[in-house]
Length: 516
Image 1 (cartoon, helix red, strand yellow):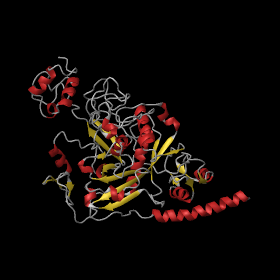
Image 2: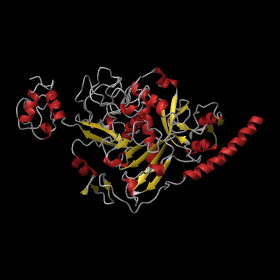
Image 3: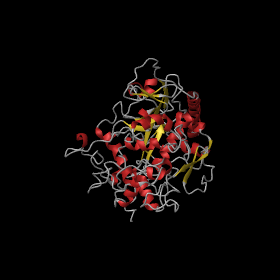
Image 4: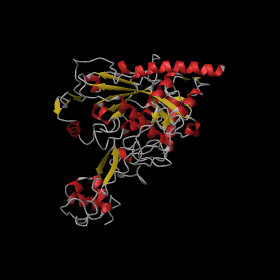
């Protein structure tokens, strides 16, 4: 009887706490920060005006696309993360000595996910311009983006295959703010300077970077996203420590559009935040793949990034087109490798030891579905009530949704809000998007099918186009392998005409695919 009365008292307390949580949860939007109606534009960085025009170096461009074209082919708009310079005997920037520093990766078994899960609290800072006409991202989009991030890190993303490596790293929107109050892990602010990725906005907005992953949505300086520093460079936990994502590529179905519409820019940049280089870092691997290239041996070496879903410029073997740290179309990205996972976990334990908590393995079908049956119901409630109170030790229990070390009314409130069937995603009911065209890649975004045309498909190998070894006056040529190799190097040959320059490439002996 004593136990039963205790449970009744506990349930009464959590119901009261639930009402408080629901009241807190009600606003669709919170505003923080300041409105900067007067400002100074940095002429060296792009600035988007209310009318959509981009101002940069005293010139105006009608759109971001026009601005990017003006930057030239060497401008890397896909990722603005600065790669560390090659180091000498003392290492890059002088920081060496760990199993996952800037010089090397030691993929020790101690960093394997079998040793337990790590959970990282996240705060997303959504930044709009002064009049809120640009930059708005709603709560549902943020929550869905975090689900995408977790799917990719768990090896169950939309393009993943059975056997894809799971990282044992999970991300949750923070439930407790730095002052100990309840939160939904999202802030909204209006400031045109900050929106244009200028001004030291992190000094005003950052939650302790030692304890939270701070994600900011801005124009990202015109790129898709970036991390300001690699953790092994010695700046992890400093106030500027951050992940920045272009607001148009944030979440599924962002306004940038295909092929950057599956929310994987955040997956890529979070890989950098956890110490991963691009797969094409420094070009082809040297003699020791642990200390050259991307410092990872189970990612195939390649000399330059892959775009679309095609493999090109390989050093040896097949390029890692499916890797999240490449530049492929997002629909073709599906994995981190086993040794990339170990490097990320090493980075957490070495450079970011306070940002993650060890936790039970809690692979929810949806939030609060503790028994993974696709529903939040009495069975999940029973599992939660069985663990009410503080955790026994430092391990976070499943059901402690706000990661405060205790299962109490706040967690119970989250469960009641999520009660019922797990909501199907908008693409879950779409059987297939295959349009039957071999020259398109088809996939679903927010319940709608998208078809991406494969470059040069239907042109290379066309018997009407003429030989690779002749100036034929038509786009493409009849020998598919040779044609694709040349066109990946010089798209003019397939987009415009197969002229003498294309013929000379085919006859140069520099392309093994061209054997004539």
